Image (cartoon, rainbow over all chains, first blue to last red; front, side):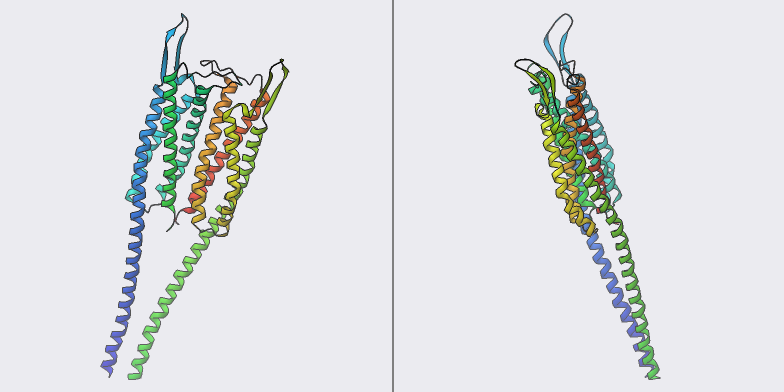
Length: 206
Length: 206
């Protein structure tokens, strides 16, 4: 009797411990599976983020260099004057070249943070840093694109009320190049909005 | 002996259960306290968000109406011509008035979402909606401000290379009003950046 009771003694707690440890393992497994699923989905977002950044680097370098090299010299000139138009004749276009070059450099510098997000998809800090700095740079990009667009519009259409004459009839190639640069910068604005949306979705809790 | 062994039998599992249930309660308490602390801190962010939106509504309505009412008629005129400048003489300023009015309406419509964030500080959906729509509206605001700034700069300084003469010597009050509107819109851009940072911080996991 005494022996039987001792076997029961040993038996009961051991099964209890077993079952409870089973539960703990199951919970851990569930947690691990959930983290892995969340991690995989967030890693996909991070890879998309990285590819978008690569595309944005290409577009911003293109926009900045097209605007930088936009220059046209008319084939006729007087003794004192040569008719020439370049990006440095317009302060707004200078602002555009400098701003979009800054944006391109920022994008290159942001690549390591994007890589960290791919390696550690659940890390919060790189995501938050990217989201906030992307927002500031988005403002700079859209400001540069809009300011240049206002001047390009004026160059195309002029303004009769203030007697500002259009110059695109004379400097057609120059206007073409600046318009292209503005369109490219506008596309990079869309890319930045997508990047911010990706960061926001990746930041949110499950 | 048999009775003693049964008492031990009952005793051991009961203490195990008690201690484990204590642990569970403690864990739950900890979780509750953490959620409450996170909720309080996020409620503070949500209230700041709401106040920022109220301030931004005031500033954007001010900017839009200052630009809308900017008009100046010079005190001399010829038989056929009266010298007058208004916001509708410049397509860029029309764009500014419409865009900033849209921004102000958006801000009013976003107030309910901000209130939901105050009432339920841990809800993810209203935060995410606010962050994404704020980003789009930030782009619109900064584009309108930058385009108007480019034209205001031109009105002040002109451009000798394209023979666009400054008009602010004649239309001083008009230029003053448009400059004020651009400055107000730029301040609201800063407000939007703050709003996005608040939403990002509130979205992140603890």
